[in-house]
Image 1 (cartoon, one colour):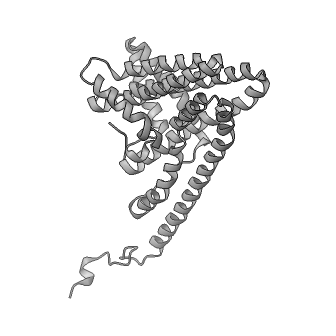
Image 2: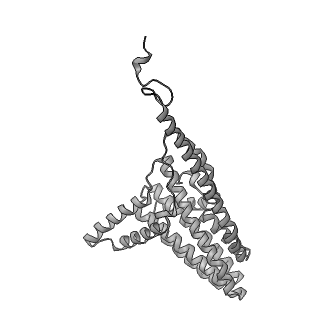
Length: 310
């Protein structure tokens, strides 16, 4: 039911997925689909947002409980799809869109509730909006780390620009047929999201590497990828739950703004350092190949089998 375990957030494995596993065992023999579970997750997230909007300690506590089950159902939809073998691009896009809608609604409601209770809306929104943008930025970065790992380690193509082209071709075919209006809308939203976060100069492309260089890439990137995923969206939601239960929502806002941003910058600095090391290694390999004598491999062996015969 899981993704590759190194790509799972620790808080998911410890807290949310065990509950999701029980839900999947309940839903598996029924006619309930993964997309329907995704929509249930959206409904729970909207209820959670309504509770946070009120701002009082009791409502915030209830909102934290609903947020917990929101994330459990969010885990369960993909797990059910994997068990049934019904994973699809549309399901993947719908799940991602629901996640972003839920996060935005819950976070905006959290800030509204805080501004009402504290009576300082200017201050709350002044620090809250940058903190929210930092959270959204890091969610996109975690997706990028996961995609690059799947590409290098599991040979799954995840080039965002190529993915967007293929999805637009599918959407154009449906448009010509006059069919699938809902799916076309989902694809349009998803391609806009990818264009916003993934393409252009926002992200540097990883070093192309094979063989021993690929092994070094995996060795260098494994701890960095784990660091990135550790502070993923589920961890942020968990911290919001804890802040809600303890009625310390402002603490979470400061945490996201300061620590969350610094954590992200540190991970990116380590990532760029690893890429620099790989580029140096690749340049050395190219230089060694250029210096190798004619008829010999870069490792020093003869390129002519007859050269070693008696």
